[in-house]
Length: 382
Image (cartoon, rainbow, N blue to C red; front, side, top):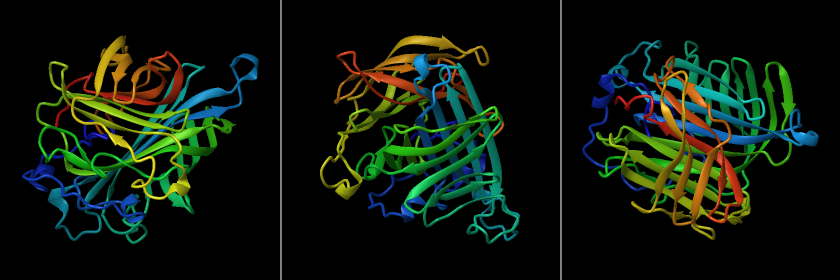
């Protein structure tokens, strides 16, 4: 979604700013698939982001009810401007980063890990020195032993982290959701603060999650959300952080909402989208029925209701929100307060990202998804 010190920003060297002078905004275009599911190496920053809610056989739930786990897998790509002209096959023309996490709601435990490696920018398999690569024709990202790739019509994520393993197959149940103006998403007051951005909500998930060596097969009803975004520049200089939600609603609808905050905590920019349920995979392009409603500036308001203070960073995060959107007023509640991730060994940031539940204005539980909060452990350093 938004470039910053976690999945929305990579830790970039100062030379990167010279790669693409931020004089103009991105041009509107028609995204083409599967090509635009792949890497866009001429753009400064890119990420593929998968979050989800997994149901597994009940271990601690009353009466053997299904246990709930959250999971997150994010791959980032960063173009290094100063190395583009180097001829060496060892030149780090691109950097690939990855974060992954698993949340055990009943066990009140978060597992997370991270990876980072150089990439020459050559096609996957062409340079034996590469420990990381990303295809430019479809989704196929590898970073050492971590991968997110297309297998037939599905996506597969394979992650082995510290204390947890994810082996997930993601199956589309709806067409692509183009965020913003047909895939061109504004992220600030100036036109140059924008990205190309699409989502795949309501993904069906099969596979397994292992925690401390115990493998748990996912049950029917496990769902996920994928974001893919690439840009030259996104954050306004006054932005210090943001709040974002991506929610799979139980009726098949999809809700995205975000705000960028300035140093006073006021909203510098906001946006998002709502697509009603029933956008089946056979419905064709999003230009047909169930076209999303794209939120205009000022239509989204985040109001914090409850905060949690991290014992690690001492940052105070709102872990319960009232989020006003054109679709409804929603109450967003973290399912586990401590879902703070320390990524200082890769992207250099501490941020909060975790599984949440959502209630509508009639106090009905209507969906689950992920909440992301940045800039609370320190202002973003761009």
